[in-house]
Image (tube, rainbow, N blue to C red; front, side, top):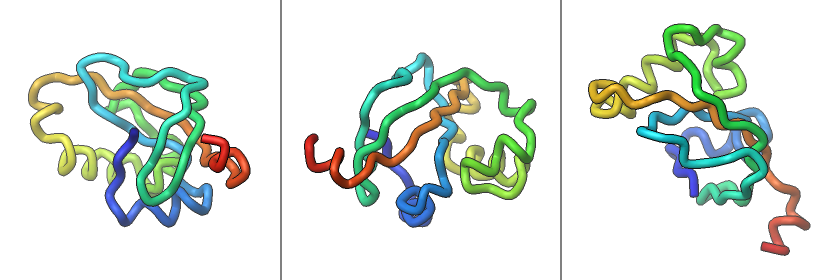
Amino acid sequence: MLLFKKKFLPDIRQGIKTQTIRLWKHRHMRAGQRSYIPGAGYIRVTAVERVELDQLTDEDARPDGFATAAALREELARLYPEQLAAGYEAYRIEFHLLPLEEQKKV
């Protein structure tokens, strides 16, 4: 299960937000995996890769729902202060919302 702030749910449901950056000690998800986002529905994870936050570009930030990489980094600093301080690794999870007919099969 992936949890998101309510402000991101409309963009996930509309297919605008198709990735998220998470800070973990180790990878928690794999490409091909199905997962659930409360308030949005079931997703298929299409890629999971380790990223360096300071290397992210504005182009990297847009599928995450941010206009700039700086705005994305600010949000991550707000959401994950303890994980950043502890040196957790950043992972980009790319996903797409499953069509309603596939969601009913779950």
